Length: 326
Image 1 (cartoon, rainbow, N blue to C red):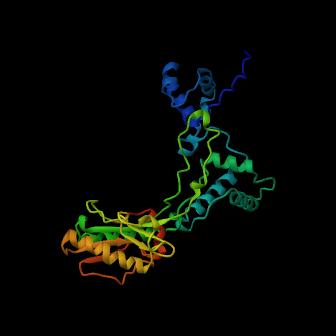
Image 2: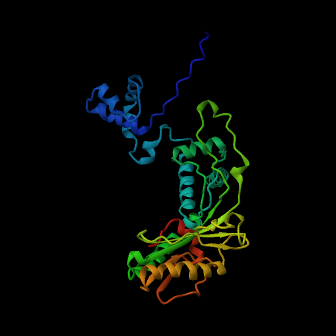
């Protein structure tokens, strides 16, 4: 039997914070076994002794969080450039809801522009420089999702505070929240548990990409003690699966040509689902209904025993991903 190639040992980076911890412990005469046992990452005694050889350098380094996370003590070839580029990065990131994605190309362009203003002629904003800059300042790349980045959070907070003050007049069990969601009822999950030996051969099907959809309208009170019947919105007037005796839809069903909520479907839900359920539950007592400011929600519909609240104006709609009214 031929022995396989020996696996190369993964190199463990030791941050400056860990190195300063080693120096501090040894300065108070803590023994090596105790020092190595208290470290958050495994460090051999040989490497720890090499660190102690440069103890004066680590004692002189600042204790700020950015320095403590770094693993390389080298300051860089252009420290002034790094500082100005980092200030420029922070200015872009601080734009809040007007923030734009900060990409490699944007960092390269900004660094080149700043280097020209500083009179640095031999600088090249290469991909390697960008990687080093991001590592030095502890930045990472993430996939942006949702729409909350567009939200004006200060204005949203003010709006939410006004809504909360108005809702104080209603007990929690009479505060209702309504929203819609889509259900891809034919779409299968794209992940599954399989035997480990089959993990490279497992394949999906077309059913994982089915986009046949119905819309569900969900409504409940703030305490969760009263959940209204879920309304289903589909395209057919009378779906085949609900035809025949004993096959009636167990949920309130409405049809719309694109299976979306519109003003006509909303009016039917308001009159035949919401008002009936709320009045049967509370006997005409004053209730509150919170919903988003969608154009499909006909605010002209009203009732003496229901006060409606639109959670956010249209310009603040992305804020709903950051705030939950009630």
